[in-house]
Image (cartoon, rainbow, N blue to C red; front, top):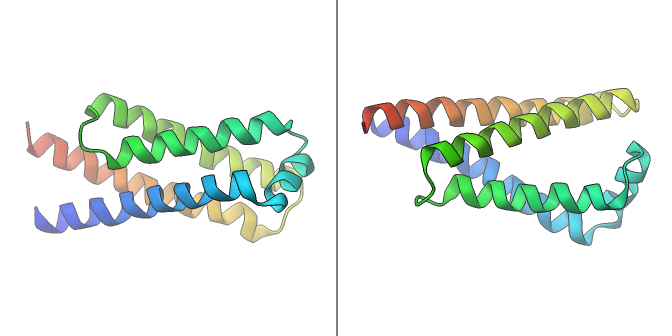
Length: 123
């Protein structure tokens, strides 16, 4: 049980902290603005993704959100990471740019697995 909580909190923290850092970069780093142009996306989509990451990180870390709301956050992050890997692949970015979102997806899956495991124990 203790090991499960540690794995859950480490993986969830990695996802949330990474997302919060990304939010900061989405709104301050001109390289991110240029990368969204490189992808062919309008600038408002960068803002939308940044806000979504902020909300998702808060939902995953805050204990007062219900399990159902947290599952939606997991789904949103999953879609985001899969989409990021695909777009990096499609535009011909380096392999590392394709792999990083997939690594995040694995960390997210581990977090979700332990979230579900801990939630079923608590019922």
